Image (tube, rainbow, N blue to C red):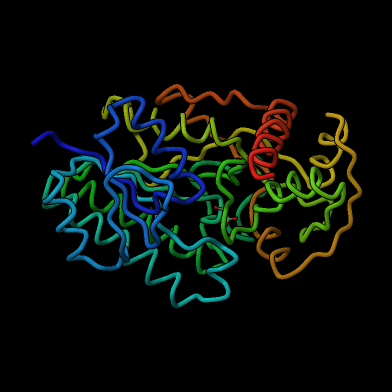
Length: 315
Ligand code: SER
């Protein structure tokens, strides 16, 4: 039987776009998806279940001859703070289940880490690849532990696992769920619906961000890179743009969309304050030739166009 690719957390913000790219690249039938909830619009092989269910994962791997896993199922930073126990269980048990399958069945793995692996003691500007990792969120704790676990499975068992520290990902096809960087997506919907947005972060909170097309390209590129070029087996720093809510609002207005901003910071402000403002990703740029394509203006244009499309399809 032809080997297949499995995407976990497949109907989430990143998975739903990765499905399309991988199908285009490797053929429609080459992708099997795994998610906790069904998606009625999806046509293809979908396994519905919990990523902490090791037996279901094993059955899926065996049934479909899985040789690559993009393991995206995870709880994000804000929901993780509201339920740290569940965040630990889903993020850590899920990753360990995937790595165990990879060890037994010779599977290549992609797993995302995040800027959330950093913490208040990390240098905030141009954060280097190797630096202090003392996160203050449970999500961040699972990312640091996960990075080390990936490296361990690589050095101890030879599992080919590759990882990126994603910044906040900005997209319009599927909404993000439960992250601290989600304001940078919500703002577009509110701007185009109401001409007004109340931001849950302060106006001067700079965070590293990336447009979805860049994130998908980075993900596919690192997986396709020659293994000899992968010199980091914890997780690569990855960066595109950094901006504050105020700078984003100005860029949206400059693109011709009227927008009244209010700021009402909540518990997510503390999370954002613990993360870097910008990231040094020269290792990714050197090792496997990473290069972002979307700056702030280009991303804003793509988002406005995409959200408008979604809105007119809905009405
Ligand atoms: N976008 C994520 C979050 O805000 C960061 O990895 O939780």
